[in-house]
Length: 457
Figure 1 (cartoon, helix red, strand yellow):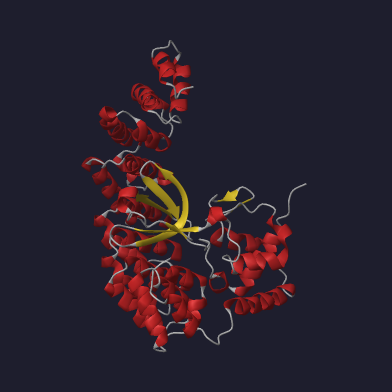
Figure 2: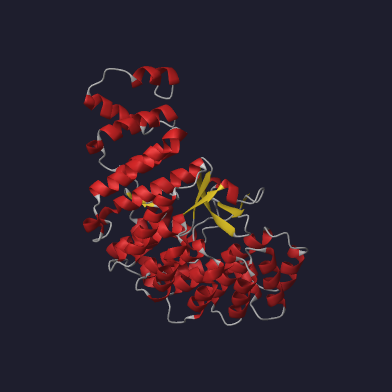
C-alpha cells in the first residue's frame, strides 16, 4: 500500500503518534519509491536518536530519495558520524563495522542510482581506509580493505600492496591482492608475478595471483603467465592456463606454448581452461585441441580414478567431525549455508548427507559435472577489456552484482560493461581444485562431517 502515491499523500500529513511515525519510517525504508524515502528521511532528521544503525538505513535513503534531497542524506551521514563516532573513538578502529556499513551503503546506492559521491564523502572514505589499513588487528584492516576495493581508492594502494606481499594470514592478503587488482590492475602486475613465483607462499595465494594476472589482460601480464607455465607445478599450471584462456590473445598464446612442447596438453582437458577458450572465437580451436590431446586418457577417466582412490582411503579413515566443521566453515561457508551458518550464495546444504560418500565426493572434486542453471558462471568483459566471471546474484538499478569462487562480491555498473559481452558458461563458480587446496586428511574430515548432515525428522 505504501508504494501507492495516493496513500502516501494521506500518510505524510496523518496525525500519528511519535511511536507510530517511527514505525512508519522503518516500513518506508523497505519501499522503493521517492515519497517513502522522503518520509523516512524527514523523520530521521527530526528524531536522530531513533537511528539505531544508519548502516542499514543509508542505502535505501540515498537510492530512492528525491534528487533535490540527496545532499540531506549526505549531511545526515556526516552528522551521525560526528555524533556517534567521534575522533577519539575512531582511533580505536571501526568496531562492529558501523562506519564501513555507512560508507559502502552510500557508495552502493550511488552506483545503483548512477550518480557520483560528493568529494566530502570520498575524502571520508579515504581517511577511513588508510586509518584502518594501518591498524594492528587484522579484523580492522579487513574493513579498510573492503572500502578501498569497492570505492577504488588510489591513495590506499601502497598499504594494500604491502599487506598483499608481506602480511600474515592468507585471507587478509588475498583480500588486499584483489583490492590492488580492482583499483589498478596494470600497476599490480609485478607484485602478482612475484607472489606467483614464491615457492614458500601458500598455494591459495599463488593461485589467486595467477588468476588475477589473467584479469589484468595486458601484454606484461600474459608474458609473466607464459614464462611461468613451463616450470609451474600441476596445481598452479591449471590456474595459469585458465588465466591465459580468459582472453583471445592469451588463449592463442596458450595453444602455441602447448604446441611447442613447453606446457602439458592435459591442461586443455581441464574445464576451467576449455570453457574459457571456447568463449574466445579462436579459429580452428576444436581441431587444435583434438590434435594436441590425441592419445591422452580423457579427463573423466583421470578424475574417476582419483575419486575411486579417495573413496577407498576414506573407508579406512575415522573422520574428526569437529575439524570437518572447521574445514567446512573455511572452505565452503563463504558460499554455502548449513544449519543456519554460512552465506546463502550457492545451494543450501541442510540434509546433504543423504547423497552418500560417492556422490558427495563427485560434487566436491568435480563441481562442473552437473551444474544447475541457476548456479552457472556468468562471463563479462568491461569496456577496458578486463574479463570478469562469477555467479550473477542480482541486478540493482544500474549495477550487476556477481560473486566469485571465494564468496567476494563484485559490483559492476552497466556503463562499464562491454555491450553484448555477457555470456553464461556451463561451469560452476565453485572451485574445482579442492583436492589440491584441502589437505587429504582434512578432506576426509569434511566428507565425514557432511555425511552426518541428514534431514531432520
